[in-house]
Amino acid sequence: MTAHTQLDAWIDAHFDEQLAFLRELVRVPTDSPPGNNAPHAERTAELLAPMGYAAEKHAVPEAEVRAAGLQSITNLIVRRRFGEGGPTIALNAHGDVVPPGEGWTHDPYGGEIVDGAMYGRATAVSKSDFSSFTFALRALESLGAPLKGGVELHFTYDEEFGGELGPGWLLAKGLTKPDLMIAAGFSYQVVVAHNGCLQLEVTVQGEMAHAAIPDSGTDALQGATHILNALYALNRDYLQVRSKVEGISHPYLNVGLISGGTNTNVIPGKVVLKLDRRMIPEEDPAQVEAALRETIAQAAASFDPPRGGKALRVEIKRMLLARAMKPLAGNAALVKALQTHGEQVFGEPIPAVGTPLYTDVRLYVERGIPGVIYGAGPRTVRESNAKRADEHVRLDDLRRATKVVARTLHDLLRA
Image 1 (spheres, rainbow, N blue to C red):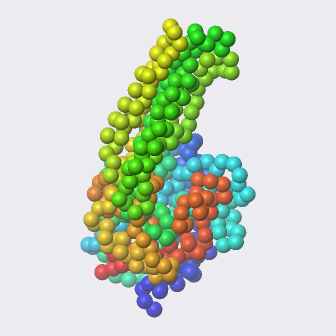
Image 2 (tube, one colour; image 1 turned 90 degrees about the horizontal axis):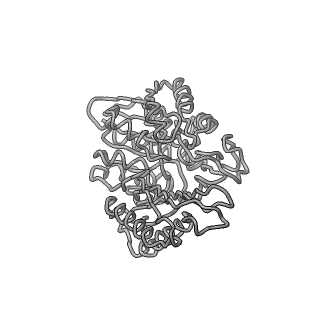
Image 3 (tube, one colour; image 1 turned 180 degrees about the vertical axis):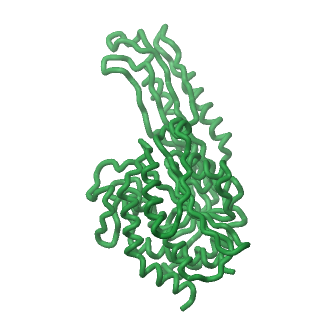
C-alpha cells in the first residue's frame, strides 16, 4: 500500500469515531449572539484528550469579549511537531455559529444522521472541519512515517463577529506563526481569494413628537428611508464593477437590521441602520468607506424636515472591517496538493477560485502566511443550508475531504 492508500484506509476504519466526535461538538450550542463559546472549547479539549491531544486553552480577557458584544471565548491550539525543518501548517476551523432560527425539521443540536447526511447547526460550517482536520492529523500520525515540520489545529470562536478575537487574537499575541494554513471550507473547490466586508452602524437622529401633531417634530424613520434609498441606489452602480477573480462577481450593499421608534403614536426620534458592504479584492477599503460616508451625509443633508423642525443628525460607526483575501505566491504547493488529491478522491477536477464570502483566512494572509480554504463542505453554501434551517453535511463529503487533507499534509511534510 502507498502512504496515500494507508491514510485512506485509516480514515475509513475510524470514520464512525469521527462521526461520534462531530456529533458531540454539534450538541454543545455556540450561537452568536449571545456568544458564550468557552463551554464548547472546554468540551472540545475534553474530547481531544483521549486521542492524545493536549489542547492549549487561550481565554480571551472578559473585557475584550464583552466589548465585542460576546460573552466568552476560549481559543484552542493543538501542536504536533515532527522532524526538524519543514513547514508548520495550521488547520483553522471556527466553532461559533449563527442561531438556528425557524423552520428546522431536525434537532439543530442533535447531530442526527438521515439519508447519508448529518443534520445540525455547524455540521457544514464549520464544526465538520474540527473533525476532518483532527482525523486527518490522526491518520497522518498513524503512518509513523518520517516527516519534517509540524501541524497545528486552531479551533477558534469569533468568525461570525470578524475573527479579531479568534485567529486575529492568537496571531497578535504571538501564540502562533505558521508557514502555511488551511481554513474550513468546501470539498469541491480550493478557495484562494475572497471578498472583504465593511459593516457600519448608522444612527439617524430626528426629534420625537406626538403623532397627532407630526409637524412639531422630525421623523427619523422618514429620514432613514431617504438615506436608505440613496444607499440602495448604489447597488445599480456596483453591478458595473466586476472582479477579475473567478467566483467573485461584483460589490454589494445590504441593510440587514433596522431598529427605532418609541410607540405607535409617536413620531420616531431615532432610527438605527446596520449595513453590510461586500468589497471585491480589487477595491480599496478606505475609499469604499469614505464613499459610503459621503453618500449618507449628502442624503441626510438633502432631507427636508418640517418647517421649524430640526435637521437630521447622523452618526456613523464602523462595526467591522474585514479586508479581502488575495493569493500569496507561497500558496502554490498547497493549492496543487489539494487539487491533485481532491481530483483523485472525488473523481473530478477541483478548481482554484474566489468566493464572495469573507473568512478568517485573511487574518493569516495579512501577516504574510499563505492560506487557502478547503474542508468538508458542499459545492455551494446554499446546498448545505449553512446559516439556514436543516444545515447538514454529506457523510461522503466529510470522509473524502478528510482524506484529501491528510494526503496533502503528508505530501507537504514528508522528509
